[in-house]
Amino acid sequence: MDLLKEGYDPADSIVQGVKIVEDDPTDESVGYGGLPNADGVVELDACVMYGPTHKTGAVASIRNIKNPAQVALLVLRRTDHCLLVGEGAYRFAISHGFKHEDLLTEHARREWMNWRENMSHDDDWLNDDERDATVGKTWDALPWQSAPTRDTTPRTNDGPNIREKQEKPADTPVEGGQPKKTASRPYIMEVTGTIHCSALTAKGDIASCTTTSGLNWKIPGRVGDSPIIGAGNYCDNDIGAAGSTGRGEANIVTLASARIVDWMGAGQTPEEACRNMCKYVCDHMKEKRLWKTEGDKRTPTFDLKFYALRKDGLFGGASLWNGGEMAVCDAAGARAIKMAYLFERK
Ligand code: GLY
Image (cartoon, rainbow, N blue to C red; front, top):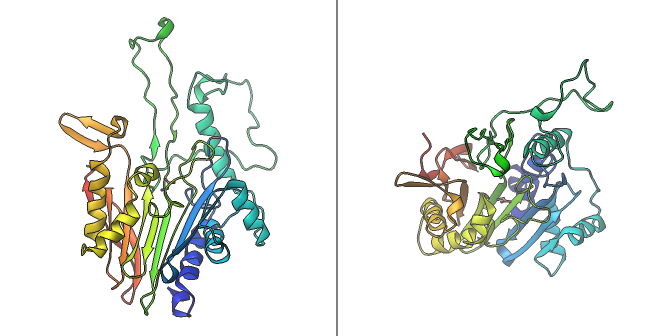
């Protein structure tokens, strides 16, 4: 907002805004400090869309570059293309003067190693409960590392936070007659936090941006909804903008952001369009594993959040589950507002 007031373009303003979190090593879901893929490598996705020219720029699976939204803005402004991926996106960023940086923080590395070691007893990585006791003190940290700690505080993200694997009952029939052991220590299962940021100028121009490190422990090369225009981000200068955070796969198959903007164009308020999109996602979700069934009640196993801004300044959002909040800033100041929802957690 400060940059908009100083006369900066809305695209530059939002890209500088999300940079604050991309640079933050304590945020586990965006930029530097984001949790890595299954190989322990941080891969980032981002997209910017610009209302005045109806053009977009995006990067997907980019490594070693801290600020993917800034690279996406350069794709928008300095190329004829919309989306660069992987090695090409990295080389494009380097050629524009971005620094090669190691994005894996010590905290993220430890969380990844905790997941890697504790996810199964059927691999060669020893789970915490498989390691033999030692007869003396052990020196667990390498000389340049701080003392090991394990963070088990609940995450404020869109995923199911830390999931503790349950021990199988001893009488569960298993192959070879031996009950199969399962991991006993909690590890971070899914973090799908992301930032979407949209801005509207006093003259009515709109820009929107989404940036993320994507799903933690993902298969290397996995691209979420954030850099897919129409899915994680979309804007139309005549109508408004929309974006999403949460389970990207559910968003890619429904092209939610473009649909929300279209629905606002057809007369729905931002909140109505976001809430109707939550319903649309559920109506189109046919994969059984994504539903939890208790009696005749079916609830999704993940969360998805939608944020929308209309050309007249009205904004709103909705999420599958209750408890969602979005940050807004207008003439009335900066504040968090509650989002509409479909399902209620007790
Ligand atoms: N919405 C972020 C992702 O799924 O990667």
